[in-house]
Image 1 (cartoon, rainbow, N blue to C red):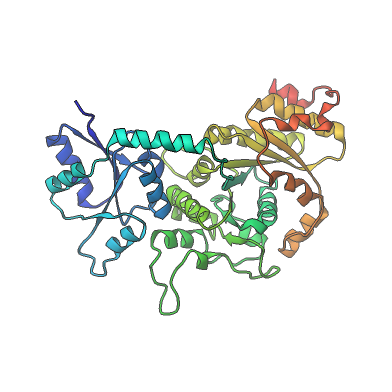
Image 2: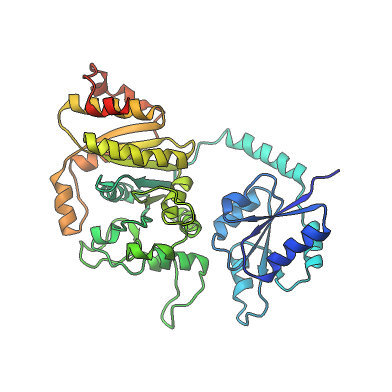
Length: 421
């Protein structure tokens, strides 16, 4: 007996979705319909067909290409009553070739889906060939980097510094911090357009702004208002106010980052200082989902005993979200005394175990404070020199143990170490 046809249906308020669920529940024994909230659920191994419509927030050309590459059949539903034909055009522009009217009778829709069920055996054979090919090719460079940490640790400066260092390879800095959106103010940029504008441009790439121009993702990058003029990297400004957090959905933010990876070599996402999961509300869900999606996570801590304790609280949530991705740590405003650096290193290691990839000590640099007051970037100095160690090829696990400074004797246990034990 063949396996049932598994259909992943995107959440939709239109009638086709509820009608499809009722028909399958009451009359179809060999068909299963599951609702999916994002592209990650749609990529599940056993899914045969993914049904979306032109209002599905997480659909773009990159996601559709990934679904096709995973052997899924993607079907798009459009509302034929829309006189301008926007829905049908949107679906086709994003690579969905099997486009169906939303008013098609449900039994006819199910028959259409059965006719377009992919061959699972062939899909598995194709994957095996692809895996064998990928084993012979280099691993792609990491694309989305999430930067965050407790409030006041300096994660904004680190994110700006990394964007500056990567600017030669095409970089964009995205402020996804729904709690303290500060990138635009830090760099003297206008707060409009911002991330919500960019999300809308991704969802509706042909939506018109008027008679002058079209809303494109490129037109949503922040513009200089107070600072130094043109930056060497692009910026997607954050929310205009922390009170606007409900305007940005987590799946839309992740879709935006995925789209940006098609245009930029490096996408740096500044995430929030609070990663707590609050039942019943998506208050910090944007930062949480960005860390889940990121290919690399960089946590920033103030290099002091108190700062380390606050950072560990943030790190506990971060490593749960990052899954198998190891976290790179930046200890900001590090002391000049090597023995104190060693002590901080040992405390962090004892508390966190093997969930860290690298630890980078960044010293205090007056150029950073001056640049923050002037709303500019910095051109040189120890801050950038130390951050530059993070911009090369990813280091092996625990490679930082070989650093000479950490080969000295361990100093006596500090208050943090005693508290952790």
